[in-house]
Amino acid sequence: MYLCYKIGPEWKDVTEGAKDLIKKMLCKPDKRLTAEQVLKHPWMIQKVDKKDDKPLKLNYQMLRNFRNAEKLKKVALTYIASQMSEIEISELANLFHKLDKNGDGVLTFEEMQSGINLLVYCNNSFRPE
Image 1 (cartoon, rainbow, N blue to C red):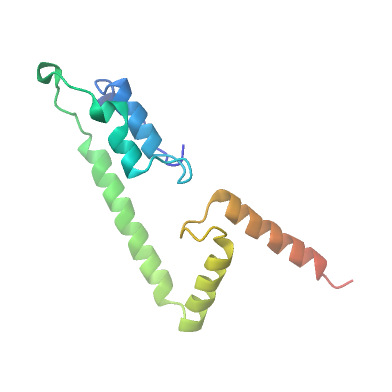
Image 2 (cartoon, rainbow, N blue to C red; image 1 turned 180 degrees about the horizontal axis):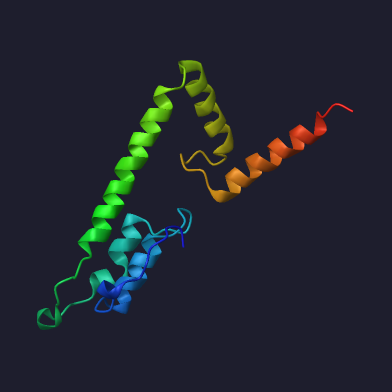
């Protein structure tokens, strides 16, 4: 699974079809459904009997925690960027683009691993004897 999430009690009344759709939307980008595929998913096109419809129980504290974590992440990134010079930011952007082999703007685990392996190889190759 691409994202970490905890299955809580609010999921017990969610249909298997809805869970299947959510799982297929919360996965690695190369396996994720397109918008067109989402709209054609069986759960999206099925007819629902309104009398079986139940209100969704949300864990608002988890939503608040997620929102707060995102805010903290933005503040931390802004602070880090404010401490860097324009040249350092440009070099970091260039490094990111070199690591992003498929140019999709997202670094996958494989792209990061490849970059680390190259760094280790280069460091071992240029070590003075």
